[in-house]
Length: 126
Length: 126
Image 1 (cartoon, rainbow over the protein chains, first blue to last red):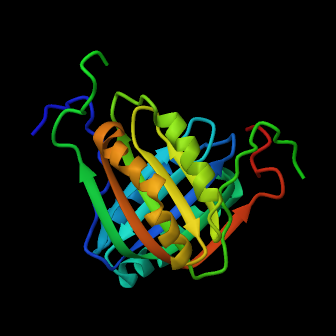
Image 2 (image 1 turned 180 degrees about the vertical axis):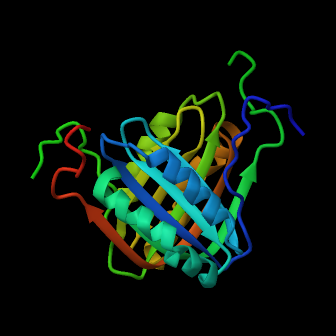
């Protein structure tokens, strides 16, 4: 309904529960040689998995990065988890790219979304 | 073992499952008047909830922000969900601060973490 051409980014929407979320929070090392290429390849691989629903990513400059990938069920997640190229990338990540990370694998029990459909309200003198 | 004084940030660690993760992904509006003060107050309130385990946050410049808050059990999450000040802040968020958001509430079934304990391996010639 609006013309927000300057805000194309949208979070992954809510799906009908249950589904799975893999929350990956990480701090990277200084040396990121090869990271971008591997990351692109991982995106290509995960998108090919039946039951992959999408992913959100945010990275604070100089700080934490968070990736949340969503999967329809445990089978889809298991396929991603056991993918040979993915496992090799994880090993390289621990050896080179990550100072620290945490992975939380979780079953989504409820979810909801909000999308603005009109201009934000504000005082006329704003 | 290292002297990374410039990388103090660490992700929230893995806890013993089960526990809960509330994944909040959002794109903000241009007008963020009052957001910082409210956000600080929300952090103060959530920290006071028994069973609150911590939160990770990342914000891509001009893009998506992701907050993941961790709770020991459904009771802790329910307390946060029904907090009156929190609910008022959510209403204000929809009216003023958010273009779009999604909330995924999930039960963590497994988790693990990694922390580098030695210098990254790399070729001597970099």
